[in-house]
Structure formats: C-alpha cells, structure tokens
Length: 299
Image 1 (cartoon, rainbow, N blue to C red):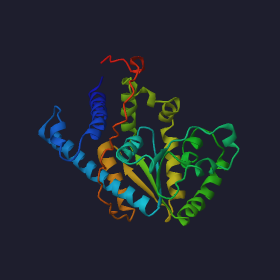
Image 2 (image 1 turned 135 degrees about the vertical axis):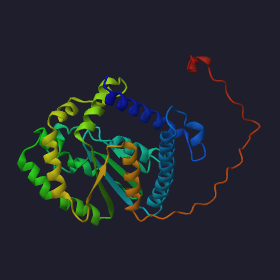
Image 3 (image 1 turned 180 degrees about the vertical axis):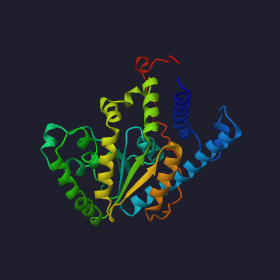
C-alpha cells in the first residue's frame, strides 16, 4: 500500500471512530475521551474540531426548536460527486436532532411507474410540512448529473429540466419553504483515494456501487454536467453554495456554519422541565417474565 493510501485509510478509520465518539462526548468531556497517538498539534486540531462541532450542533438544536415553534419549512439539498462527504455532513447535522423534525430523504432509482410521471412528482411527497426540516441526500438534480451522464434520460429531457427547475424552486420559496442547495466539491485525486479506501475496507465496500465505479471513468463528463447545472440553476431565490470538501472535517464545520447563517432563527424559550413523582399503587404486583423470553446473555 502506498504512503498516500495508507494515510487516507488512517484518516477514514479515525473519522469512523470520531463518529462514534461524537455521540458519547459533550463539551466538558472532550479531553477525557479523546485519546489517540499523534503530535500535540494533531491533538489540538482534533480537539478544536470537536469543540466547534458541538457548538454548531447546539445551534442546530436552537434552529430545530425555532422551526417547530414558528412552523417553518426547511429543505436542504446535498449534491456532489461520489465520496465527496455528503453523507458525513448529513450525519453530523442529524446526530442530535429529533428525527420527527429533521429527516433525511435518499431516494432509490425511480420505478417503472415513476418514470412515466412528471419528473418532480416523486420528490413532492417528501417535502416538509410546517415544523419540519428535510435533508435530500441527492435530489431532483439527479437529472442534471447521473441521469444525463449515464444516459438514463434524453438531452430533450435535460433541457426541459433546466427550463422547469428554476420555476419549480421559485414556487417552493414562494410557498414559504427555505431552500438551500449545497455542492460538495473534491478533486479527482481525493475521490480516487477515497474509493481505494472503500475497496480496501470491508466495512465500507457497500458504499461502492457499480455506478460509483463507472463515475470514475466518466469524471470529465460529470465535470461538464456539473458546470452546466450550476450555471443554469443558480438563481437568486435558490442559489448554489459550493463546499470545498477535500478536508472532510473542515467541510462539515463550514457547511453547517453557513447553513445556520442562512436562516434567521432565534432561540426559543422553554419552560423548566420538572420530573413528576412516580405513582405507587400498593395493589400492583409486577408479573414475572418467563425466562425463555430473555435474550441470551452471551456477553
């Protein structure tokens, strides 16, 4: 294994570990739980990442409360090349939020029936109701990207998409939806390394589909399709925002910070929570649970 591949594999392993640590840590236990080999400078960088991530996640909770209290509707689109880090950013956004308020939409390929419908029809049912945030892990922009490059639609259909999508998004905004669109940008070399890491890691191989592998071969076609998409669908009502995603951790922090800055939320006051006294009924006796119903204690 080359040195660059080895470093990339180490980075991916550390990132997977960090994802688990993020759920266990809070602001006061960063130093206690971060134990890893590395220089003091690397330790400081990692500590700074966690501190900033937790700060931003506190703000995301405030945003969530504001969305619920004022019955707002938020849609965030995540687009970008395969292995650009969209999924990692989405995970960090949703980690501490209420899944009943903030949900992720990641649609599979359209069915035969859906292929005969108006192109946007399958996405409309996933749009938020009042008090909801919806994150699209890929979106209607599939038509301008993978469908166009892989030949799953005609150029006439692509042209109709480009004519329709600005009006569609303007309509969403007019109805009160806050719409944000992010493109995660990585270099050819970074995608190659991340794909190699996935090939070598059995726990990540599921992330590589035949379509992902074909996308490597058609890198330049995807670049041309992306450039046309950004040029023709970057509108004042719903502009594109490009996230430099070569460094995953920086990309997450920058993207979440920008997202928060685009929405004029305020902190919502909550009444104090008081735990009620447990009611004890003398006549109640807990029924025994049959031993065969218990999960075996193997560990």
